[in-house]
Image (tube, rainbow, N blue to C red):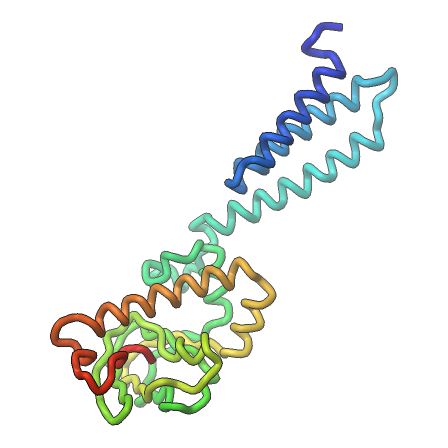
Length: 233
């Protein structure tokens, strides 16, 4: 038997590929390397002795099939095919999220165009709903001061993260469009899916950072020394 067909050569090659795979951080590359290593293992089990080791072959093929399913799920999570068509128009606002996490987030949301003024939060009151304002005029009141907020922001995110009451009273004018999430359901989803939780935390953190930057800009309401964080609601 030639060296290329030697069982020892096959199993050593498979083992080397597996070891290299475990050094790779990229999940797609890691899984592809494991598939290649599995192919060499199956080849080895087929030629190692006079009769193929069918139990080992079937077991390895089963492991490879599970790996393929995981690879497909990983691809779908990062593929634009995962973006719901009814929410494709707003995905640019959430582009920090992989498409799969955006789909999961939208599955928990309610998208509404309000016909009457919507009181989203009340200062110091518990928050049961997290909002994201897609369009419309938002007025906020905090510590006796009133100020306007631009669309494209979360409302109630401080309370969502801290578990405390809202830091401001906020109202959306009629005609505005908003996404709503039940806070309890969103937290439950985040606990069950750590990767989703990390993506959501990153999204909210970017929103908070943008608000802090806006609040600290020259001429912004935060220039008033009586309160330094008017935009964090």
